[in-house]
Length: 344
Ligand SMILES: [Mn+2]
Image 1: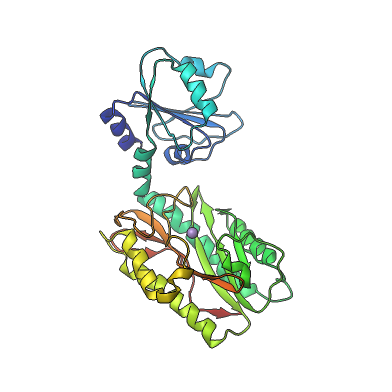
Image 2 (image 1 turned 30 degrees about the horizontal axis):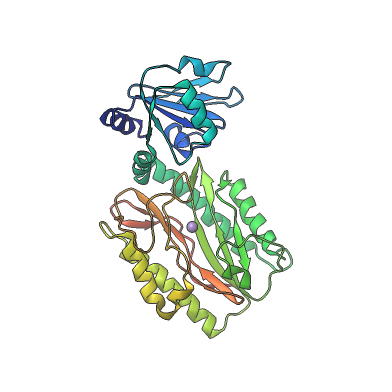
């Protein structure tokens, strides 16, 4: 995937060899498979991935697959003053020191930004995988709404296990640790699922499936019991802030502008919205582009990102609504679960 473009960057920057060591999502990006351990070597003409003999690698177009064998590094090592590309975001000190021994005269060049640029614009094959992950996520949520009853679901953990079980039985993976937060727990945006009993109030679910190494991310609120007018109004305001940002999303608009749109609608509750509006998503749950206040990055064809404003009232409750979106000339919502506040 995008190996041809990556090679032309190597030619332009006169990089002889790129060395990527697992864990590095860029190996997953270029091979479209998840290996661990793995080393991916890319030159201007060829690409080789070294994997464990314990992994079953599927053939990859343009990439030769080899197994780690005793002394495998020695074949690659040499004494010329080559230009060696590395991903500084993922390179450990131990690997760096090893590389200095293998290539004593090499000049190290950071290629992390170049791959980020490639990864920010998704191909249709990548978008299809994310869309499938979103469908699995939607199915898990609708099945939760159908199956919910107070006898079977007693704690946050019961809800989280149900969602993850549903994702897995559809052939997906759990993209990131599921957040299920009851009442005041939801005032902590990164709440960790606990055995807190379910009771009357807002219940937040922030979760997502992965499918073939690509992720979905969605947050939905349900209300256990009957919400008061004030609770319904606060939810309605946040929903308006989320939907207005989505409606504003179109070609050339900056992600910073979307953030401003949401905050303007929240008005005095803007102070309660304590995080970024969203994030790019793909192989990593959080990746480029930057979606938040001050971001000058513009929406372009092939971008996949989330919009997830929230309001948090410490000690009381918290609300967040999140969708995963793609811009392919038009902005499309990939997570299609209803955002009408459901009482259960
Ligand atoms: Mn998110």
